Length: 122
Image 1 (cartoon, one colour):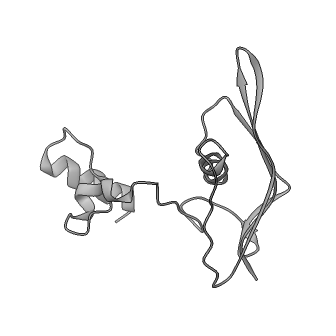
Image 2 (cartoon, one colour):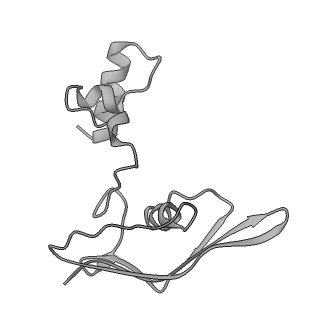
Image 3 (cartoon, helix red, strand yellow):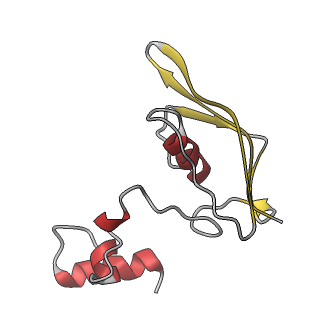
């Protein structure tokens, strides 16, 4: 079974200068148990592709695909698919607490804890 199945993923950005095609008909298939790396030159669309899968592109982006699924089910960010960003050390610090990672800077300690619990649905 395919753990991740992306078929014909395309992304366009709507700008004042017109349409900008950022990604055109990407196919990516990752089988269960496989480890896959997405490699390419700077600006080749690696981040754009994964941000599109996660639904995290800016409002001026238009995403089309024939299929984006996880284990045969539609990809639902936060339910059956998640993303570790390019610099995970900025938050995923093993010496820090989950509250530190999920809290908002500038809040007092109790407010951070409350925000962290809401974020992870305790």
